[in-house]
Image (cartoon, rainbow, N blue to C red; front, top):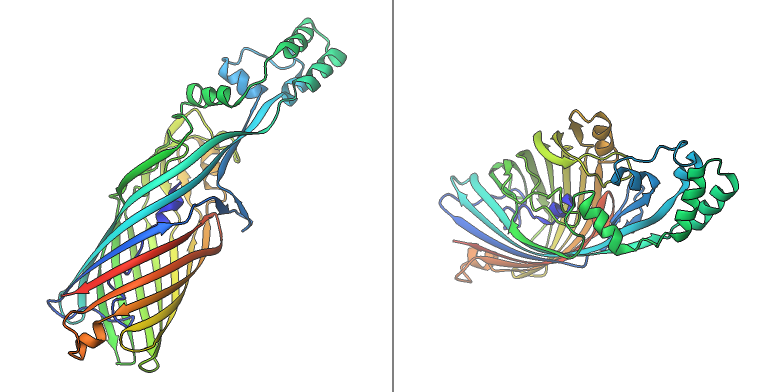
Length: 404
C-alpha cells in the first residue's frame, strides 16, 4: 500500500508568508506542526479512472490445489484436461479500509535574506481493517457431472466421486492456504506507527519585485520511513525505500491587500534501488509464494499546485487550492522476466485534489507592530476528486506555524 505516502505534506513553512516566493530573513527561524486525519479509505481510482473497492481478489482452482500438493496431478492423464481447467474451489477478496492520523514537523532557518534551509518529517499512526470474504462459490457439481458424462478413464470416475464427497472450502480454509502455501502472515486488522521519509532542501528567493517573484527549491527526500512488508497483504508503508531528488519553483502575483495568486511546480527523480518483492506469476494476480530481489526504478513525479488567497483583513483569509500529481510508469529488473512486466504494467499514476484553507494569521499585524508574535493557524479540508491508480481519500488538517 505505498499509495499511503501521498498523505505526507510539503511546503509547511515555505508558504508561511502571503508571497509564494518569500523566504525567512537572515537568522530567523520557523517551526511548523501539522496534524492530518483521514476519512476511512475504502476505494481506489483504477486504471480507467473509475472508483473501485480497496481490495485484493484471488481465486482457488485446480491449478492452485495441484501446486499446493506438489503437482501430483497430470491434466489429461490423471484427470480430464477440460475438467482440470474448469474446476473452481472459489473466488475470494480481501476487503479493506484504512485510516490514519499523521503528525508532521517542519523547521526552517534563514541563512541569508534570500536563502533558507528547510527540513520536515512526519510520524504516522495507521490502522487497516481487513476481512477475507468469499465472492464466488465452487462448481464441484458441474465438474462432477461433466466427468461422469465425458470421463474416459478410471481416474475421471474416481475424481467425480471425490467431488461428490468433497466438503466446501470456506474462508478459514483459504486463510490457511494464504498462510501455509503462499507464506503471508494472516489476513486481518493491522496497526502500525513510525516515521515517514524525511525531506530537506534549500529555498532560494531568486526574484522579488514586490507584487510578484520567483522561488527556487532544490532538495532531497531521504528513505527514513518504514517500507511495505512483502509478507503482509494489508500493511502500509510509511516510506518507499529510496532517495529522491527534486527541484521546485514557486511564483505568484499580489493583486492588492485582499487578493493574491500563487503556483508551485515540482519535478521529482526517484533513484533506483534494490527491493525484496513477491514474484507475481500472472499480470492480474498479485499473490505469490516466491520472493525475489528486484532493481526498482519508481516513475518520476510531477506535482503542480494553483491557489488564490482572499484576505478579509490582516487576520483572516481563505485559500482554495487545486493540486495535480502525475507519476510515470515504474521499471523493474530481475531474473524474473515475466514478473518484471507484470509489476511495471499499469504502474503510472495521476491524482487531482481540491483543497480549501481557512487561515488565522498574526504575521501582518506583527509586521505592523500590532501584535507581539508572528504565527499562523490553518484549517485545511482536502479531497481527492479523481485520478488513476490512487486512493480516494479525504482529510482534515490543522497547521500551526511560528516564526521567531
